[in-house]
Length: 252
Image (cartoon, rainbow, N blue to C red; front, side):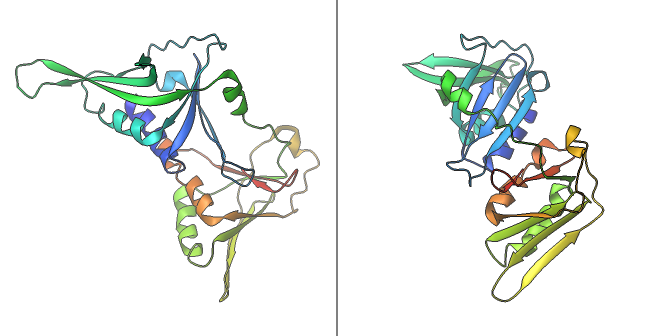
């Protein structure tokens, strides 16, 4: 489905200009990794059957193929396929010692003769080695100290619009009793938004001995947090906020 894949690419293009893709026979992983622990890191997973039909992924690296590419080029190629009367075909190809993701689609001819034209676009990619792909594995932290469902993204964006005018740093606080606090400071004022009665998902054994009233806070760059709120194209049914206190304060 080119529209579903395009929605994913648009979502990531609001976060970064480039992304890493790892294709397997059953799944596709898209990641954005920052330069340091203070950077924004994004890990996303999708089933191949929800995006592609008739998939073949083969490699000596346990049938994994990883590539790094510029999202704008991929977005433009996918947009051109939306009016195609037949599903586009995507394959990895090599031309003149360069590697490309070839996007091929068929469009009805404007001549009215009933013929069709085939449009092929090549998106430059850089293949990832086995060690590169291993570095893209999502870290497995300890269970979060705080984890609650939070409001839908459009509601949070509306709140953030009011806060980002005051300063570059956003303080995010929450507790397992279902309370979320967004706060920012300026020389003129401190603005704080409190949201209560939020629900909590099940998190395995993390519920055992849970201190529901223990409140944790972490400071984030407000512009970076705004990028996280751009995931609307993937239409999330629910959003869980996790706060980790160790080994250093982290918002997930």
